[in-house]
Image 1 (cartoon, rainbow, N blue to C red):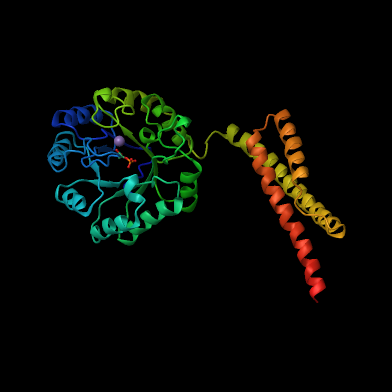
Image 2: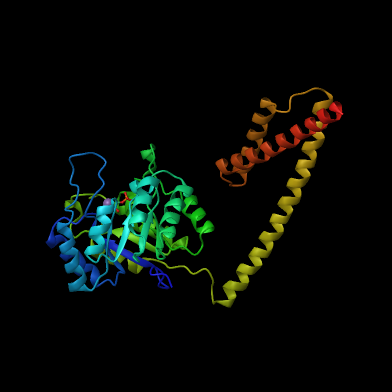
Length: 358
Ligand code: PEP
Ligand code: MN
């Protein structure tokens, strides 16, 4: 059984950074009564610009040892260099995590994985800052190859030039979902604090993660968030965390309620028959494309005709809007259909060319 799978959401909470002994103990005391699974605190902080607070380093390890002994809470820190790993292991840190700025660098990840050969400590791996599932998976595989068996992924969003979206880091939910599809057994947590960068949005993103069956949450918590030395805008108080957790709706993949079960089954049957119809119609549309390809070939017309394509998009878009369908969705769908049509028409031309060559 994975360290991270408890049959309920795995909750990691604690401050962005370990600032002072009092701040750490005050936060831990409040969080211990909330039954969280792991206490987090950054002791080496990766800062975007130089000159900012970069963490208390090894000094803070003593404070975390106190959290363990006083409140019986397991603790986790971010490691980015091999000496961080050595310190973590010497000081009985229970779990380590790899930050987003480290996951991007395969050399660095490999060094960290090598430092863990023969060690059994659970490792959590944040997504790289850029939206690349393979790079994320690659980091996970490097630790697996080093013999680490307890691994969890953390979705913390992706950097973007577009800051108007309201998120500090874009959630791009399709990426963590793709990771889940490729590695269904791997626990995946969500870090709504770094995704939103804004404490008012943390609960809403945490709920979204639960709706998508994430296995847990990492949430930055501080006794006085507005005074925090790092990430002040996104941290919440332990009381706010308690509120968030009590209001969190945990959804199941299956339901025991027979009524809802039957209702869902019936709706899915109808959906299956709609999908079958959609596929049959697409097949007929492609047959038509082949016919069109032949006509165009006979009259020496180009396969791609921009005016016709513009006209098509316009009418499809109008119809979509009348049916309350999202415009971008329909455009994307028709772009895919149109590309396939072009491929078919090109192959009509090619088969004719082959005939001529014979
Ligand atoms: C953090 O958890 O405080 C942190 C620095 O996270 P990330 O690596 O996601 O930026
Ligand atoms: Mn932070």
